Figure 1 (cartoon, rainbow, N blue to C red):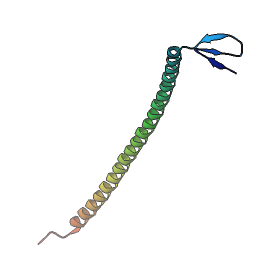
Figure 2: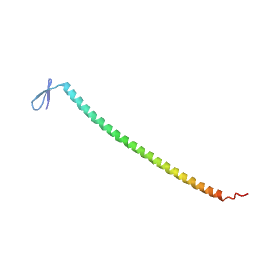
Figure 3: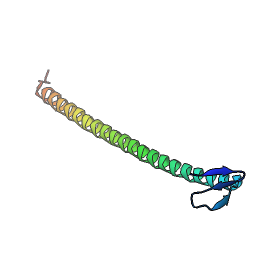
Figure 4: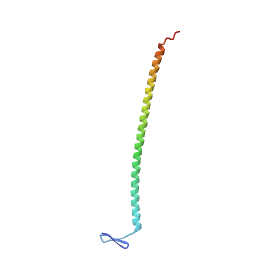
Length: 98
């Protein structure tokens, strides 16, 4: 077990190592910085994957709506053409002589 005696720490191997608060703080800050970078990189990747999924879904919805609109327009045009042909046939069969 380690015991603290003044400014030194005694380790089980009976070696003495000078305790330097500046070195310990620098090492701790480096570990925290590395950990923070890993965390932010993971968040960045997750956000990008989420955004790509949203953009893809929005694109699919937009494409589907365009296809539905085009099909609806074609059906309306076909019905209008059919009614125009029927009206032309009825108009053509009328007796126009006076």
